[in-house]
Image (cartoon, rainbow, N blue to C red; front, side, top):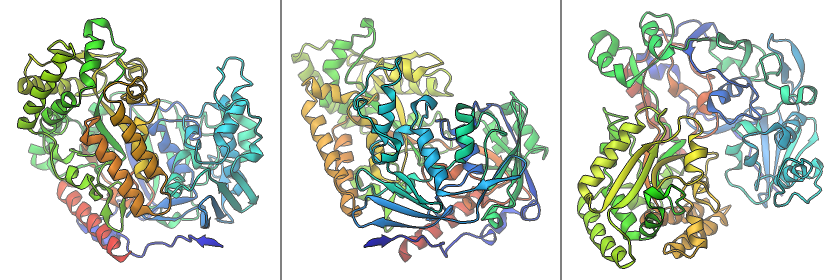
Length: 629
């Protein structure tokens, strides 16, 4: 017997009347044009291969997914009208919405949307020659996905042999099948409670099979070389000139697409020009940089045009300790390795870091709004209204700032006594690099350096702030271990706490703690225990309460033993915007936040009062919805 999972439209939704303070619509529904500038051109429109969020925006607005989220974060049907999950949790069967079509950039009908289009897209993604940046999202989830991928790698003489590439797997053995034109089935490796949420990501989008086969690697290289079945058509694409999205009037949910056209105009000076053009009502969106924010906020006229971006919980920032240092001898990697394996040393930096002070650089108005005491951000996932960060031992961590001057000094005294006995020389050199192309990172590093050295003493640590390369920073610095203590981040791939364990898995390129474990260093037992706790949590696929409790225990252990220092969520920034983002689709992962569907063009930009009211109404509606479950 199969468990029925037919998604229903949520009765509790936010309507335009809730946001009456935002001004009237800028035009009749479906008859408005949203104008903005852009300064960074996309390199591809092929949503099946890109790993760039800027490029995800195209796919998000022109191609539909099996399921989608409403503005309160509830899963609802999209291209799938209904679905079933087998009792063992290994098979999901979707009924595709019939009568949906593919269109070219001019709106000409090109073919039916069928289950085969999801199969074709999956095969394309799992073909190594196309170098999809999201292929790994199938691995370990979809049956035989990684085996099929690796079986093709062996045929490439320029590719090194990889584990499993001796298998001769045909795509028919991969767990993505069209049972008929309108029935799609996924077979999983293990029960995966977050699988439905994964379906809102680009790698699970469909593509018209015959066109994929015809174009191969050329698919999506411009707007004429792809087909559309979503809310918009990319009707014009002139690189470094203009992008024009036009409403797909044949779209199945066209009644909820209120903005008729989106015009994006290229300008390399968009950062400087956009605020001026928005003030003159020449465009409808502009980011207000930190360099001019105070001027705008102190001006009575301009301040009424300014609101903020919504807080994003799809990214988490944290400081990592490198347990396998590969930096130059002048920074004394062997000395650092001894120090970092000492828990009291790590605890001294964790307790000594004044995160609020550091965050003031990027968020001078309200730095505490970005503060994150856990790796998994609050409001990412919840169960019956209880936030994941309130489960188990995470609750106490969530409620208390880790900054504690007295504790930091106490940890320092213990660490110095223990480390001197091991032959560590002081001060310990702490190499802390930054990417010079990331705004304010250099200033933030200087604040951290000065604050930690002032509290713990230069006799104890010597933090060395150093600019890394402006290009390929990740591959040249973090991924090769050329740092001691550094700010890193991770973005969620699906709606489950497991996604936040991925940076710390074995063979990770974040803190390399698995190598400390394998080398039998001082932290070895601590790392082994963390991995054991994570494995235990992963082994609970059905009982979500128990699963969350288990992941909370693992994450708390990671933080309590200072294997990592939680820091912040993504920064918010000031904008001029004639949209109310709280009308749009919401999910703290995937591409939902990139979609224009559901949002109206307003007569005037949102003010801060409008924004705060809209946000409060949205939160209240979410809380009310949670009580009704």
